[in-house]
Length: 277
Ligand SMILES: [Fe+2]
Image 1 (cartoon, helix red, strand yellow):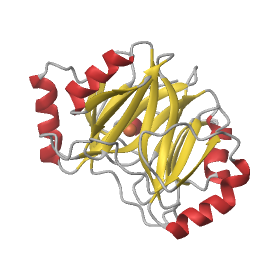
Image 2 (cartoon, protein in one colour; image 1 turned 30 degrees about the vertical axis):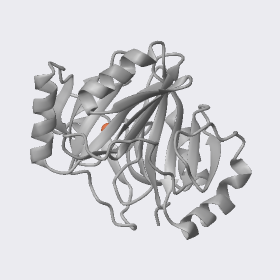
Image 3 (tube, rainbow, N blue to C red; image 1 turned 120 degrees about the horizontal axis):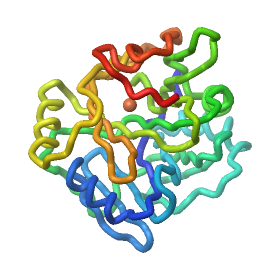
Image 4 (cartoon, helix red, strand yellow; image 1 turned 60 degrees about the vertical axis):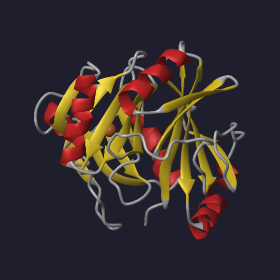
């Protein structure tokens, strides 16, 4: 049984958060508002917080629970691992705890997190909600063990090389195929965030929007093997990837974890892939 949580928002650091806020306003329809030392970028179904710091680093990722029972079960199991203070959140919630994964990434879990104050109710672009994010790690095995064994994420698919070494894995917290992807890479950093839209038509509209603002699609359009989602990606000024996707696999609770070969075709059934390692 999945955790019963959904990815709610991300906080990234950047040497120039204003430039990043401007980029995401232009490309993904966010309304950016300065709040002290943070930029809170909001659009329907998606929130992104930015602050000054190194490029390509996650300050934290926040997951939301809607159900009291699921929250209580999670809290009872994970509270003893809550070594971290909950950072200031841009939204109200009823309860929260934070943990650090083996790489030191801060992961926040909140009960009923809301939308940021003043968040727009419509942005004129097709719907696209923040659905998953991905991290690069030098050693995905202990990360997988932590997310699966300690936090209770569900492994949907693993990618391994000929020696059986784990090269990537995809974990879900609800029925959608992955809320978190981990890629083995020479460095530890943020990889991408993905906004899931509702249809092929919406993918086309998002692509035409990028064309209209002369933003280059750097990967895709393609279809990932694990997750079966159709996607394209643009790259923000810091080098982080930002994905628009559709048709991500809806998993049954008892779906067995899949195993994929580490090759370009796995990451893009239609052609070329960005290989992280
Ligand atoms: Fe993705």
